[in-house]
Image (cartoon, rainbow, N blue to C red; front, side, top):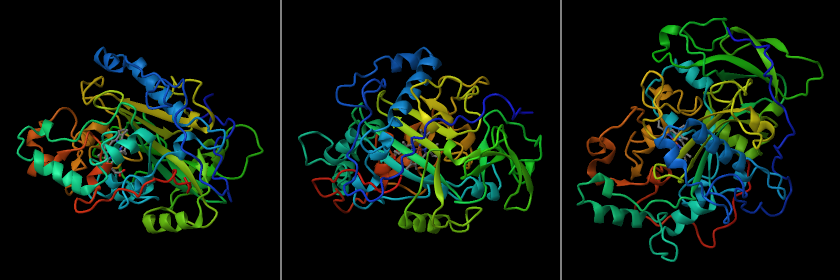
Length: 457
Ligand code: HEC
């Protein structure tokens, strides 16, 4: 059984939350990842790491993980001017295509109705709302595709439609594709949960090592073990988040009754151990609408949003580098948190990490193709806990076909036989955001494209 009293308590360092500066007149300017974070997706003068593909080929997990941490450290580093982690100054979906939303969404993959490894009730337990962010080079590529050739913007659906028609005759799916993004492109997906402004809010915790089908301590939010068809990982327990600073000493436990009426004996963690923000009324209303009947409690003015999940992808290798992070109350443990470098600061030290540089490698100890998923974003899906980011992203194509975005089949598959590419689909270089562009109109945002949107988050 886990030792909850172990030394690796929640790390609470100087807060970098720095919510939106209320009343500020102009939005924060776009800020790239500063120099020194080992990524070519950073400031213009940042050198590109050139050893990443070689690290994948020789199975150098330590190097691959170090790089993924470095990028995370960079995108969560604080912009001194706005006080925000730099990723929050990045572009939003609606700045890629005017038909796209700017605010919160229920992650598209969770709208799939196929029941996952958990009961329906635990799907609700794990529902997070998401917002994506894109760096300058990603955005520029979508808006212009080829620098200096403004006639080929990918944000223009009619351009995509024309390209698809032109390439339709091509039998080789690999060749029916858009140009590759530049190696400096980065996209981020964030996942957020509501924490009530007063009282304790229960939040499920994903323990990567708790793979047993039986519940050792009666604290499992899983309805019954018979509902678990994929025992490899599950929500094994809750923590309770307390927005008021705790003056006592040591680790605190409370008995809290969960939504299902079951009494939970849970560890209490401070709000300050999460990257968190206070959303405005419009955002709260939107979240209320999105999560209606799907979250354990209502959403009210003054409630907080805590970051529970973050995905990023960078085009530093042809198949992209994939990194995923989720909050944990014992963040320094193996296998997902022991190697976090000191360059990751503040609350961001409380997130575990997994990474993927390829569909298969490095293999899991039982020979299974490499697994990399986020419990909040992919965990609830059928096969999600055995998936790899690329299970879905290699199928990214335009236009979006019903449920083509959802496929958790591990290992290599023949793209030629894949239904996602029937009818001469256009491959979109692993990027799903493009799939939803309306092919009948030019949805490019009006130039000059405004600075990033300063609404929360
Ligand atoms: C079950 C399918 C699935 C899996 C597995 C998956 N994703 Fe995605 N991902 C999607 C879909 C669908 C979207 C588009 C929805 C949206 O607009 O955000 C997306 C969007 C993204 C985006 C925004 C850029 C884009 O492609 O539109 C990032 C970054 C991302 N995912 C990272 C990851 C990472 C990292 C992993 C693995 C840890 C992963 N994804 C696993 C389906 C998946």
